[in-house]
Amino acid sequence: MKIVVGLDGGGSHTRAIAVDVTGRVIAYVERGGANSNHNPDAKENVSGAIAAVIAEAGCSEQDVVGLAAGFAGLDRAEDAVWAEQYINQNGLTCPRKVVNDAVIAHIGALRNQTGIIVICGTGSVVFGINETGEHVRNYEYHHYAATAARHLAYNTMFRMIAGDVLKEDQVLIDQILLYWQVGHIMDLAELAKNGFITDSKERNHRFGGMAPLITEAALQGIPLACSVCDNAAREISIGIRLIGTSFSAETIPVALIGSVAQSTYIAAGISKELMRDTVRSYGIKKPEMSPSMGAVLMAMGLANINIDELMINKLKEYRQN
Image (cartoon, rainbow, N blue to C red; front, side, top):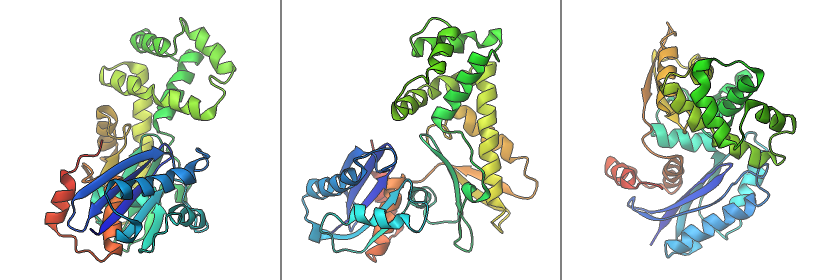
């Protein structure tokens, strides 16, 4: 049986999918993060994920006819060197390709069509592919929307400690105190003075886990949460409109990816903010498929497999955990 392998190498998880040439998902595995800046075992995680998904599919390396991988942190041409080393450990001889993880997310979300994606969860980036095939990120504009889950939490925490709160914020304050298992805001101030948590990875994970409290509180109309989420929506929309200037179309599709961007309050806020653009209109749409499936589509292209609607529908039937 011939298969292709698609790999999504993020900062927190490495996800690999094996699919046969008809579009049937054969195997799926997860390993730890694939970004060496965050995980010292990144290379082994990637190699292990590839080996495991091939084995789970009941295949050998010789059965793989195409492999595509998207990696967080693959930002420059020279980064392709380490990324290719990551996927060349398994004795594969098939066509292979490595790209930034935003590329496979875009392919999965918009099915190789022009448009813009917002990835906002563990990390944040605004990425577009325009009519000429040009890849454009908000980073190129020196714009960085600090709107990942941990950023919402940090912003909320700093405002609480600084006293920038109202009595109507007390419900959220109580939830955050309980989350950190302290009794008073001054206890949080003491934690802050000592860096909260020494290990940066653990600290960011802890703050990231606090974000759902804020997005839910915004839905309830709690002023502090609304203010933080409104600022996030505004920053994301600025990034989208910056990327939009690289397009010639008057209407541009935008897919929102990640827990923050897809949260009800912030997604609505992004839509509202985008209405400020008087030159272009933006159509917010649900991503069609996951980044992992975007990598699968790229791998199928490498293997010259015809991708028709029947195959797309079969791929969409698979629900990734």
